[in-house]
Length: 142
Image (cartoon, rainbow, N blue to C red; front, side, top):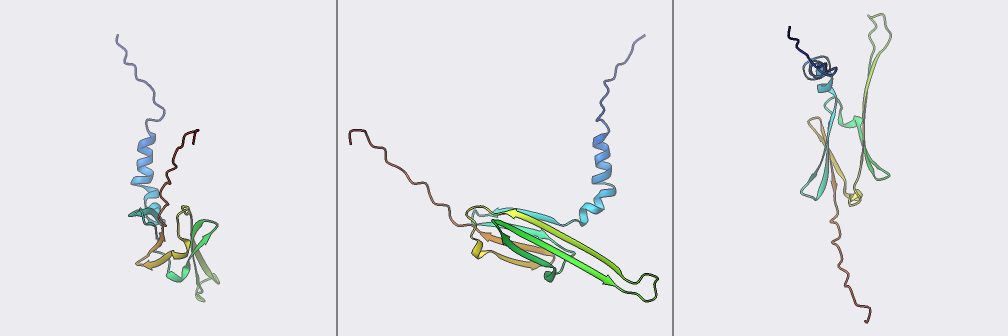
């Protein structure tokens, strides 16, 4: 009588579970609604931060530089009063916060930001890094 041995893998079903929950299932709609932030360097001349804030208006957003970090905050409050319903006030709020460390060569005085079609784009110009200085090596006799 031949026996087939099968190695037990306790993590075998985890990948399928992750796919079911995050890629196709319950959390996909939640993930699609959360704001995303892209941070990249453009032509070695500027650091670009793009925050996708579709649920916010321009007056809900603040951008600050605090101790070498760019801080983006957005906060929205909604209040609804309906005298025909049993509750007195219906409130909801949402917020967004990101703090991004700025590189040493960031020119904080020239940072600009604009908000268009739900995307906040912050441009941080980068100062040109000083080139290395060559040091001449002398002999002991000199």
